[in-house]
Length: 153
Image 1 (cartoon, rainbow, N blue to C red):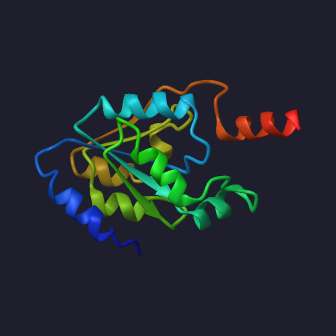
Image 2: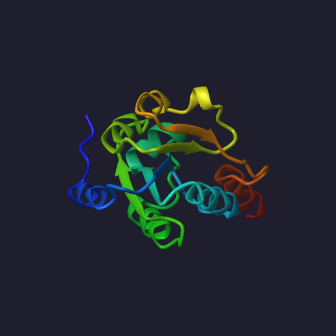
């Protein structure tokens, strides 16, 4: 069971009358596709809250060679983007318990996810929120970036 960090709880308490947009991911090697997606997500509400997979979660999902960047570095980079208001690290394979703790107004994922596939959509919809699949920037992914680097060696 996920427990929201103390800082996360304080942050959410300060957002009572604001529209919270939630998204999640590994954000291992940040690229233009991530930034465009996060900017679009932020434009939908007042607060952009990111659930970020921990190092152990990324390893389970992507394999032993990942993440390339550790969770503290990934979190630091995300927190320093203009569009991002808060980042919470979760250790589970999905952010379901974190979404249950946050109960955002809007839940988004990249365009490669259909609304029905988005984890936590049931929670958001049951609480009167909306779920959206945002624009996907074709050809931009962390996996593609890693492959390009490997091919250039």
